[in-house]
Image (cartoon, rainbow, N blue to C red; front, side, top):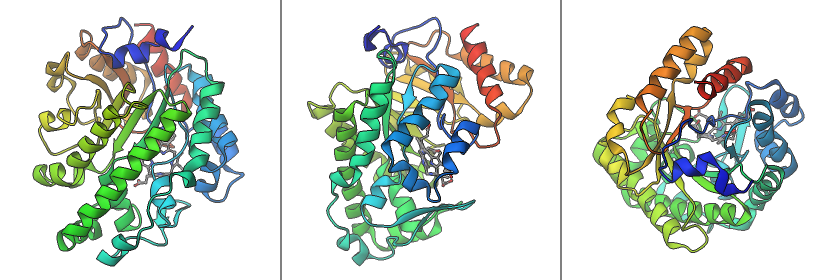
Length: 345
Ligand code: 1CP
């Protein structure tokens, strides 16, 4: 079997398939006892990400357990701000915290030029995972969108409304754009290195797309994603690597997202499948079961999953996924059940 047999790559090539390929956002993580056993050995989550052998083991855990059609690099989107010396740490129960966030215009000018070599531990993880996977299973490399990375870097932590970030971009507009451009350049080099190391597909996570109005979303996020995608499509190393864009509940028309030239759109769980089937032939679609449905009974899981499969039945290039990441409260047995009912339909 070679990679050309992959149903995931076929779907990304907009082919119509009888059974959709399956993978799950955040398929490796705290909901798995195997993950928690490894995690216990590290105080700081980022230290674990800096060990390529451990990353390989963690990426393979869901592959071995559920036999999924694609594997995703085990890492985090915040490796780039960490490499920019913003000093990212993950506190128990709090998520990421930056010791050195971007707080004023001068901080943006003071950022050291991005040194891609600082993230060589990520490229090593990619090559380890690629070597360990069966040849016909693609490996997804990833990065956060420039906007999402900027939001964490300015806020200094996660937040509901990212009010510090919103004030910063209003009061320091020029520096906001300089920072977004620096992040865009870093994402391009970072993804190119991941592809060189063996990533077959790229996913861009715009997890904080929902914070911005339509015109601000175009201005602060989509313009930079479009420029990142254009750089990838124009580079001989990455030009044939399919790109998936996940945008969480964007407050804009679908057209302006598709205009980024992404190959595949990953739908958030609140988005209605039927509203997207008109994109047939233009982009592949991925999604979008609400991960919280996995806390319900098997009957409800089946009903909700089949509703989505029905909506995308004739869609050329459909990939089954969740509409956001699996949360730690989900029972892995429900993930097995979900995978089985999609394949046996
Ligand atoms: O303590 C722990 O064990 C850490 C939990 C954890 C894990 C398992 C974090 C902290 N990150 C990850 C791995 C991770 N993150 C992966 C690889 C695992 C896989 O997918 O199989 C990926 C692709 C990510 C991507 C990521 N990190 C995103 C984008 C996807 C999304 O969920 O929207 C985001 C926003 C992050 C930031 C982040 N990292 C970790 C946490 C708790 C968060 C979210 C913080 C917040 O709520 O704002």
